[in-house]
Structure formats: C-alpha cells, structure tokens
Length: 239
Image 1 (cartoon, helix red, strand yellow):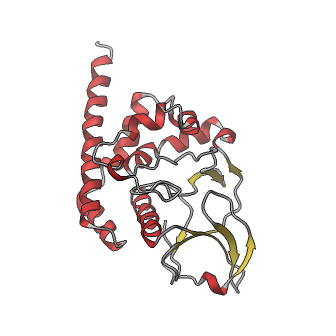
Image 2 (cartoon, rainbow, N blue to C red):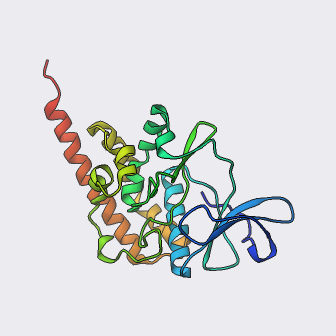
C-alpha cells in the first residue's frame, strides 16, 4: 500500500542502518522517531515504476510494506517493520500457501524478483506474509535495467515463476501449485475492472501505454484461466 501522508524528506533524517538489498539504501529515522527503509535508484523512472507497482499491488489486495513518497524523485521509501521471518526457506507450509494466493499478482506485474535473489523478498509480520520489495516489477529489473520486449502482453511468468531453474526460490515458493490454486490466483487479477487499472496507473503518473499493456496482460491471464477451468471440468469425475 501507499501512505497518504505528505512526501518525507530523507535529507533531513538521520541514517541509522545500512543496506539490506541490492540497491544503495539505508535505514533512516525522522525527528519523531519514525523509521523508513530508503532506496536510491538509478533514475526517477525506476522509482516511479516501483511506486506504480505498489499501487497495482494495493489494487489487488496483495500485502506489501507501506510505501511512502519522498521529496527526491530517485528514491523509494517504505515504513520500517520488524519482521518475524525474512526468507522463503523459513516459511511454514501455511505461510507458503498464503504467499501463493498472490502468485497471479506477481505474474501480472512481471515481478521476476517476487521471491528474491536469496529468497529474501517474502517476509512475515504477525502471521501475515508480505512482499518486501517491488523493484523488479513492471518495466525494470531489480537492479534497474529496463526489461524491454521481455515485458510484453503475454504473461509467461505464469510458467516461469514456477519452473525456471535460474530462479530457484520462486520455484520453491510457487512450483507445486495445483491447477485450482493457479486459477484462484489468476482470478485475483482478472476480476479487476479495466477502468480501475487505468485510473490507478494514471494517478501514479504512469502512461496510457502501460495501462493498455496491463489490461492486455490481464486478458491473457483470463484466457489461461478459461483453459484451466476447462481442463478442471474435463477431469472431474462423472456421476
């Protein structure tokens, strides 16, 4: 989710902790004792891209850290939370199934880093599983490189996030999902009205081209959902 509060000025804060992920970052504290994890990205475009991803995750209901706008356009900040767990390998079976509910959202937003390079992009707070960083969603890779044509209207992530040997933590998290679980995760996205997608992207400063791409990706997922539903009906026992 994204906080409605005014943008924070990290230049006026005290840095009290170091970098946790792959981008230059640190833990900052303001004069009132509020703490934020702040990343400095390669460009304002990359920062805006991540904030757009946060808006789309919020639209679907997928749990994330709370994003906070900053006065610097190349920064992304989230409210600091003390995590109970921070690794896919440490999730219980119940927590892993909870995380799988949002598989469709990760696929829709092309979040290749949904599980994290070291499995460290899923965390638990008060029995709730959160995605901790959205820097690898939409148009950019987590390190800031543009995805280019790899981020198109075909949602190959529905397969890749479950079977790519080069992304072992994603496979560990999503690889054993059955057809009915995949269908339920896809439905989280396909039930969103096109008009809401356009509005959320426009409110976040995104382009009409991105809005149309996300709507097309939703349509591609709906076609996959139809296939899964048909296959499930065909395999059901007759009475």
